[in-house]
Length: 224
Image (tube, rainbow, N blue to C red):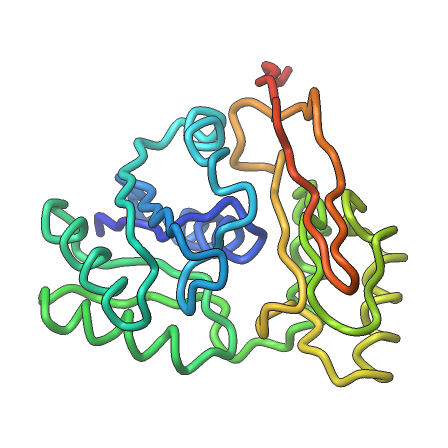
């Protein structure tokens, strides 16, 4: 089965891609929607400019569409780019968001292709452990919820940070996988990467109670 994979560079889109490849499916394209609205209802925006380097690192062709990020209207931009691809389905990293899943499913129904969500309704904490145990290197690049502070920006996801996230969940009721937009991530290496990303220049940007880790320059390193 030939599939396109919705791709942001975040942990869930990368892990969904990984699980689809584990099934033996042919991922012919990565599809990225670059929204001009940082508060997009559908699409990841933090460090989205790195998708081209990530596509190269994964050795999978990338299709990019840009959107103004208006609620609901941004979905038509996704549908338009999917219309151009000869695929049997679309992979997405939705875990618990009915808003996201239902809208992607509707687009797929309209295009007569399948919507594939390998992470749907999996235990969110277990997903985090599965991602690091699979060998992915995941950075926290944005935090937007109570319980997180500026020290989280640029942290690597590991067993210790997962334990910290679990404690924040217990105190503040967040989604531990960040499905509610509590935090954003970037994957810079992993078992499906042909090259790894090295961050050459980055800076934390903190504004009162939220912030992003703005990555300004990266390089690609061959893996041996």
